[in-house]
Length: 136
Image 1 (cartoon, rainbow, N blue to C red):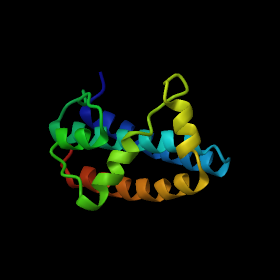
Image 2: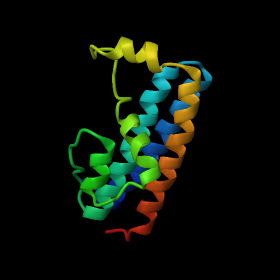
Image 3: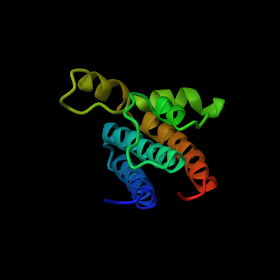
């Protein structure tokens, strides 16, 4: 069984890799996939923060990214709250009934570019939170 510190490092690594994947999909004009991986990158970062703060190997199962942050006692900065709520909705896959509507409405270059910048800011905040905590 992995320790909390090992899982935190693994989740941070996954967060960074998913952000890189999102930027690659953006460059390849697969904007809806870029948005999906942006959400995944934030989820991994928040899970790492919560696991580290609560000293657990089991992050809570919650629906929104803001709920994930709150479960670990991380107050979301007001400037990021609305965007974090929006990024939470980027989790649809092609098996979800609303996927094609999501693809048509959100899968656009300007939206992908905008949320890539927003997620970069969210990740900076999350990584700072992780770094500020002592390793269990």
